[in-house]
Length: 629
Image (tube, rainbow, N blue to C red; front, top):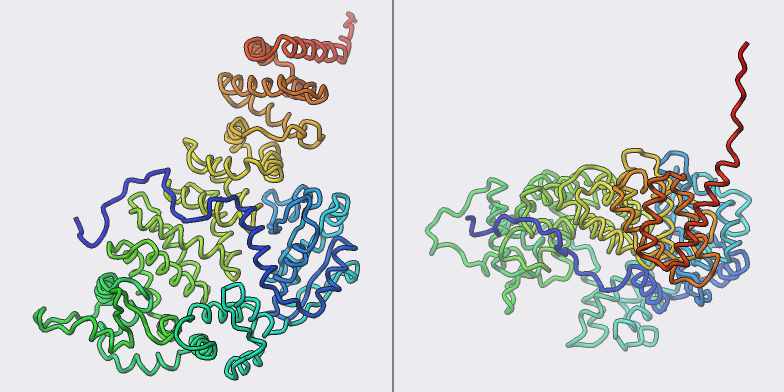
């Protein structure tokens, strides 16, 4: 057994890889929206934008990058009355069938508040959305829902003149006000507006983006302690400053490969335990082919001395850090951008580095996130694809599978790379993959992608579940995800009823029979009632009678508890219509009803069957009389 790494892992399908809040994705999205509203500094033009949204049910927000246009659009929706409907984000994707809509009309719920952030959309998406926007708005207004759209960064097809009256420009918020709000929520009581240090004012005069201001506030809050507010600001601004020049001066002074390996490993494993940095450095030296120190062991330089040469320190808690704020990040970026050949080296190194016993889960997650950020920065998505596959192979260890989950979580949550990762996950979800990868994808879709991209998460979970044999973690994740969310239940029902690929019909019929109880009014709405009939018809044709019969009994039992006559009639009629009057099916349904429901409902079922048969025979064309010629 290798003493550095964990034992070979027998995959446990019940494993949980991500520490996420024990609440629904919708609750997370709502909480994030409320927190955003509290820290939001109102920019010029937002009141006019709100007037348009309230009057027209749609507003199209534009503004310079970095001014917080997406945040402004979300706050506009948050300021609307929230007595009914829900907040959710729309993610237009190319229709799977090739002829569907990019924005499905049934995504609109009554009085919903929806965000359509196209700030990073490509030309194809922008063109498709514009083409469908009129129909979408018609349905939107009929359901008294609201939509805020953020225009793309890049200039593409001009906005149609039909929507010009919906367009409003948002200016840049006051930087001092924005920073003050962030600091107040982080527990910093100093009033920046009352006493702004000169260094901070100089920085604010450079018009930093809202994202940069948020990062600066977090740095200032983390430095609370000795000193005054001005000293905290100076240290935070120092960390905000690019330290690439300092790294560029240091690296040439480290003449030996193992010295540079220590610097790089310390930067990637910043604040990890010294044992992890030591082991990680040795692995990096080995992968790079650098020479180890051949002197007798007792003649080696101590780790503290070697770290000192690399501008790093060993703290009293036994963890390695760089005293200069921002230095670790600058070192990582220096090696990645100035020495591109190092990318292949690090890709090989990190593949096994995540197995180090000395890494605790938090340090492992931080390492994976840092490497993911480096790859995203230069568009190296192929490297990340290969890593996920390697970490979820049949022989993957638990630390590797967890690393794959962290990688995908980081990529999906990153605004810059989210689209690439959603496409990557879609490709995997429609392929035959390992059990480990399926479990990781199911968890990332259910817990991460679902927060801001609920529809794409549903699509990918559906593909994962229908290709899973036998049913397991993916199906469980899908059923948990839609349970209690009528909008998602409706979307899944539509997918199950209208699937185009015959190879998925059996799996979708099985999925339908596994669905939790659907909203009763689905039986009273023409579209959903038709989908239910189609799904039952597939179940009767493609699943074993023992399977569908038990579900039919439960279906009728819910009607037995109902009081509305229309609902009871619809429940019975859907089953009879779906049977296509096939005698073996009707016989089994009636037998189940005799055992499972009240005599009243069983009699209603028999009457419905008899009426349907009589109508069928009455509509048959008469036999033509044949005469001899």
